Image (tube, rainbow, N blue to C red):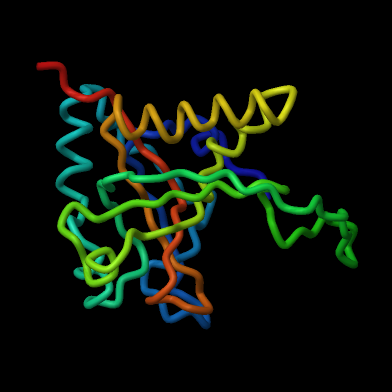
Length: 199
């Protein structure tokens, strides 16, 4: 389905209004489908870095205990990153559905990006051991595919997604859950970051 002209001009920090439908056979209250042609730009956007930072801080949870106890399946956290792995998988054979579309179990190809991290205020899980989650942020995988060979890709992605996000940037993870295990298994569905404040 093609999106309207408004949707194609939306940027990360724009405020928009949309119509959504109720979840269908999905217990997660946040799992709503957006009606693409209902998207309207409100005219408001966050342009100042400190305003953006305050916005993210206000939306963030300090621990996963809160959304788990409230049976939420979408949350923003400011992680304490302690590790990062790039795991190569066997290359998938492209399969086609009956209507000729490409079908893959792993939409991000044959590489997995994994973070090891703790909550700001340790939750029940990271009191015992750090969280270990796969990252499905589209931009991070595009970054991997921008480089001509695996060695360069691994070096550049590790520098950006691990060293910079741990040491140079304030980083937030957008976390979500899978419909089959809606309130237990979390994954990183988006990355947000900005340079740390200079003293």
